[in-house]
Length: 368
Image (cartoon, rainbow, N blue to C red; front, side, top):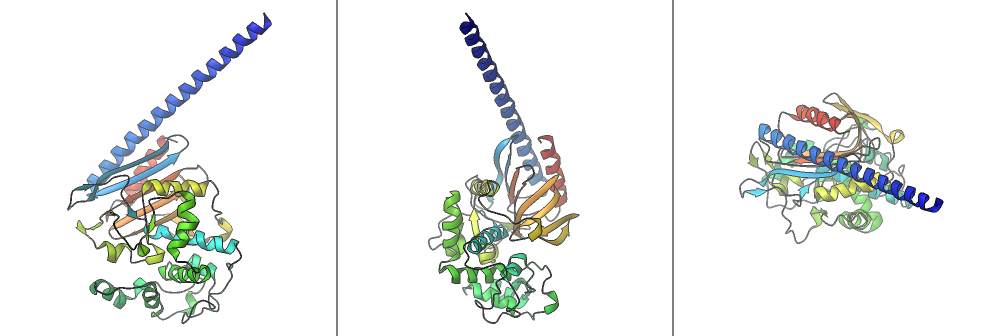
């Protein structure tokens, strides 16, 4: 008799747990659907108000799960809709990938953060004092090649000429070096192009090969590529615009080479974010970061290819943004909440950035 009563109790308990589990799942599904609907409306309203052709957004939290949405056009002229599978340039978010490869080489004992760069470079001023750490943190004092207006004018006007990484580096080095800037943060792609050359010398592989073996394949980023090394370029990439006019993808989006040459998709970048949050990549935190700059009243810090932004969307975000006048990509995650926030526009509105972030913050707060 006692066994029968006990068995009935167990069955009742299991039934209760099952009902509770189903109820929780239904509640979670409802929250996820509600968030997705609100997010889509938010995206549609913002792109319509600002005349942005297209926008992609990916979000993850324990509350709503994974949501990935796109609205608008990838190509206005050919009336091509933006899809989740559309490739886009992640721009300077590429610096996170090069930083990861560099830190892995450091873990393997092939160089150190305090290694000076003089054994690997020629003609770089102050190279006997500039270290790998300085390159990663943009504190070498080297100038951005974009500041060499004569070179940039030639780059855009001479479309027949093929430019390589060293051309960009030399353009930056052509600007007189000021030793007073050594140790002070000055964001410059020149740092990461030199770092790419050093990495290739050490590994005897190209940067693209290192990205593929160390990151793309382990993370299963099957739709991600290093654009400058693509020999058979048949992949359709989102078209980008400035003031409503299409810009030259080859000349603008991939100007930054190893400092910004990766193309990817929302799905692959979401995989990358989870890979980082799952501690597959050790990220040096505050002790390795320096005060950086302030934008829209937000204080930034910059570490090894990694920005830290406090009080963005009511949390502390880590990651990297990238873009040019015809594109913006932001890739952030929170070690506090576990949230992942990724979005891009194929034309960043000249006005509306602060309003966008404030409205997005309000939306996210409702679902936390």
